[in-house]
Amino acid sequence: MRIAVVGSGYVGLVAGACFADLGHNVILVDNDERKLAALKNGQVPIHEKFLPELLSRHRGNRLTFSDDLHEAVRASAVIFIAVGTPPTERGEADLSYVESVAREITGAVDDYKVIVEKSTVPVYTSEWIRKIILRNGADPDSFDVASNPEFLREGTAVTDFLFPDRIVVGCDNDRCATVLREVYAPLTSGKYYESAGAIPQPDRTSIPAPIIVTSTKSAELIKHASNAFLAMKISFINAVASMCESVGANVNQVCHGIGTDSRIGPRFLNPGIGYGGSCFPKDVMAFRAVARECGYDFRLLDEVMRINEDQRDRFVKKVRSALWTLRGKHLGVLGLAFKGGTDDIRESPAILIVQALMQEGCKITAYDPAAMDRTQEVMNSNLKYASSAYEAATGADALLILTEWEEFANLDLRRLNDELKYPIVIDGRNLYDPEVMAANGFIYYSVGRAASHPEGVPAALRNGTKKA
Ligand code: UDX
Ligand code: UDX
Image (cartoon, rainbow, N blue to C red; front, side):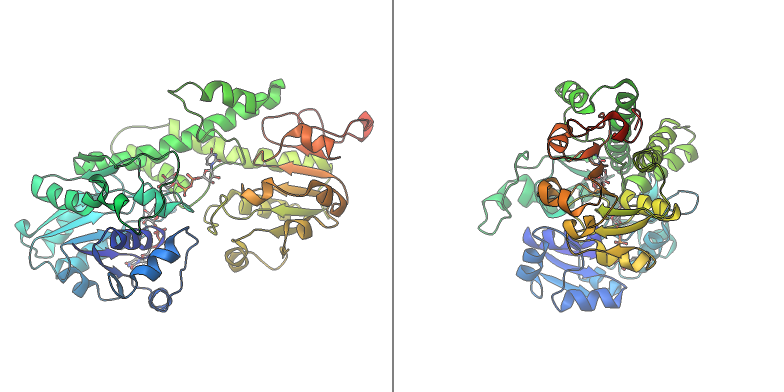
C-alpha cells in the first residue's frame, strides 16, 4: 500500500522503516530540512537496534524522504501523523503540531484517505482532527480519522513494532478498519515472519500479532492508560523499595515474591531512581490533565508522579549520607541516558540527579556509552566526560550508577576498586549483589536493600547511617 508518515522522530522513523519492511511504499515527511538531509544521505539520527539495516535496505526504493506534505498525502492512501506531542507548562499535551499537520493534509485530500494518529494523543483528538479537516473544506466522505497508538520502547522500537504484543486500531467505521487491517496484514497473517529478510524474533514474543479493533476514543485511552499503568507499577515498586529500606527488608526478595503472582508478573518491577524518557513523564501528566478536563479527578496519578520525583531526592540524600558532605567531592557517574540501550536523555533521571549534585558543589565526571553527545548539548562545561567507566571512577570519592546499561553490570570490580579513591559505590539501578560488592572490598549502597561493606571494616568506618 502507499503510506505517508508525517514526522521522522523516534516514532515516525521507526514506523516508516517497518512499514517498508512489511512491503508497503512509504514516504516519510518532515519539516526539519537538516533531519531530511541526514536521512537521505544514509545517517541514522537515533540509536535503535535494526533501524540502520532497515533504512539501508529500503532507502530510495520503498522508503523515500520528503518535505512536501501535500504531495506525500496526494500519493498515499493512509497518512500516519507521528509528530511530537510535547508537554505544555500546564502538563497538557501540546497538539499544535498535530493540528498544523491536519490542516495541511486537508488540501491534499482528493480521493478517500485514512488519516491515522500514531503520536500519543489525548482522547477526543481524533474528533478534533476530523473537525479541523472539515473546517478546511474537505468532503466528509473523502476521509476517515483513526487512532493507532504505538507501544514502542526506545532501544527496542523496531522489534516492538514487528513483534508487538498487540496492534491497537481505533476506527469509527468498517471502511476505515478494513484499510488498517490491510496495512498490518503482513503481521496479523504471519506472512512477514516467513519472509526471507524478516527481523529475528526476540524471546518473550508470540506471533502472529493479534489486532484489536476498537472505537477511536478507546484506542486513544488504551495508550494513555497503558503508559500510566506501567509508570504506576514502577512508582509502586519504588515505594515498596523505600519501605524495605525503612524496615530492613530486601526489595529483590519482595519483587520475586510478588512478581511470581501471574496477575502481577515480574516485569517492570525494577526499583531504581525513577522512570524518565519522552513518554512516561509526559503521558502520565497528559492523562492526568485529560482526566480532569473530562470531569474525572484521577488523583492516583499525582501520587505516581510524586513518588517518582521523591525517588530522585532520596537518591541524592543517599549520596549525602554516604559521603557526609558533598561540596567539592569528586563523583564518578555511570549513565546519563534515561535508560540503558538508548542515547535519549529526555527527562532522564540520571541527568536530573547529576544537576542536583552539581548544585550541591560536587565535581562530576560522567561516562555513558551513547548519550554523552546529547548531554553535552544541554549541560554546562562543569560536567566532565570520561571515555570509559574506569576513567569516570579514577580518583573519585564515590561511583554512582544511574542508568541500567548492560556493560555497567559487568565491570571488572578489582580494577574499579583500584581506580576509586574510596571504594564506595552508590547504585541507583541495583545492578550488583550487595554481598558480591562487599566481597570485592566496596562499601555499597543501592535501592531497597541494606548497605553492605567489606568484612572486618570497623563499625566507625562504615560511613552512612543504617537508613542510608
Ligand atoms: C513520538 C510521538 O509523537 C509521541 O507522542 C510519543 O509520546 C513519543 O514519540 P517523537 O517521535 O519522539 O514523539 O517526536 P520527535 O522526536 O519530536 O519527532 C517529531 C518529528 O516530527 C520531528 O522530526 C519534527 O521535525 C517533525 N515535525 C514536527 C514535522 O515534520 N512537522 C511538524 O509540524 C512538527
Ligand atoms: C515506554 C513504554 O514502555 C512504551 O510502551 C511506550 O510506547 C513508550 O514509553 P520507553 O519510555 O522507551 O517506553 O522505556 P521503558 O523501557 O518503558 O522505560 C521507561 C523508564 O522507566 C526508563 O527510565 C526506565 O529506566 C524506567 N524503568 C523501566 C524502571 O525504572 N523500572 C522498570 O522496571 C522498567
